[in-house]
Length: 635
Image (tube, rainbow, N blue to C red; front, side, top):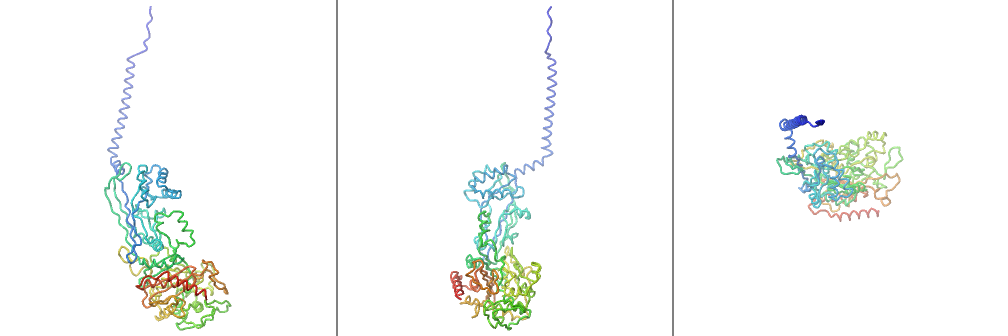
């Protein structure tokens, strides 16, 4: 009998398994579909406003609009600082996927040198507000702009933007008076108003540009633009225009400023001219100068190092920061102090044997004329610049009264209203020496101060200011550079103007002025050659400032000294005496006596301002100075 085979396959069982698996799969599919639909409903309904806003932000962008910086003019409407159209390269780090790769590509496209490339990378990483463009490079040329345009698709977050860039037509001549603008650094970014400076890459760094930054800058605006997926602007949706900065008109006279710069002829020195009645600074030159336009776009490392290492210090503003012994230029001021304190009278005389001695002291403090000037009164002491007279006067006054009277004229103080970076220099006193050196004040030091030597240091601006106060017969008008801002004149009087200097006898001013006039026009005047052909009455005083001290029996010989060890030449003057219109201070470093070099320069400045003739012949003035040098060398 045949045995039956076992059935290994059951269709009914397989069908049941399939149905269970299909049901499970269906449950999973419906569950996932439910989750998906729920998520879609959540995003579309519950989160609708959130994602609508995000989408709008991806499509619409708010961009800052920097204001146009105010222009700067001289007193006659001549443009001193303007804005020129230029193209800048900027980068928004948040829109750059690979910063290093982008910078490498930019360096190649722009064909930068290794030093330029390093500076480029430093700028790209400087601290910046989020989504604000960082300035990488200014003043792009046409070739660079073309190469960037061709490679634009490879440079997300990089833009070439048109902006106005500061430019100084007379950069070297106006360098120290105007100052310059430069890139905003990280420290400045911390203190600046983010909204007001949005989109602005430059800020005033020195001079007038720094002092009047708030007014010159203006207020930033903004615009709303539509962009594509790559962040490129498609169209403008709205705008709030920026508020431009205010234009600034200065008291400076461009032609007089150029003349002062030309007169110095590259020599180290400074010339400051002030209008006594208003305090307006007509010229303020420090030489040598430098090209401020280099600092606007960013000076290269080699050029900046060259300026820093230059022995003539072109970056140093000698007019407001240079410290110089005043020499004999301060004798008219000391004479007035002696009159005010009752120590001397205009007619009191002393006999000068060529030196002065303190009581019970063998040391001789010598006059510059070693055999002396004989009988000397106040006017003659100024005209011939007699040292012995002022040794005696300083000894009788004492350092305390000298200090008090000289600070009344502005010595040892910051005298300017809008002069950024001005130094107070030093008017020494008993208390100052005790604090500085922990030593008492000695009588011999008072004698040195009496002829403008020793510890006393002043700036050319201080000397010009004191000369203007003297010309005003004690009336103080604070010196300033701004004449009007936004078409509105500055208020009068200016804040913190010192009190006027009053004398019990108004005739004393005339006696001092007479002595100063004799300096230039008298037969014994130390600067009498300067007064040849003078068409107006002018008062002045020469000064010679020692670079180093001589021993008691040493004789100064310029020919035996290195040029930088020779005396500085100073001169102060005002004119016309009866109604002063200009006060001038001049210093020429290491030029010798002030009655030669500095006096001729001061005369040229007053001639240019007071006379309607053509500008002084600078070459002729230089020939006159050379003749004086030869004459003195012959003596």
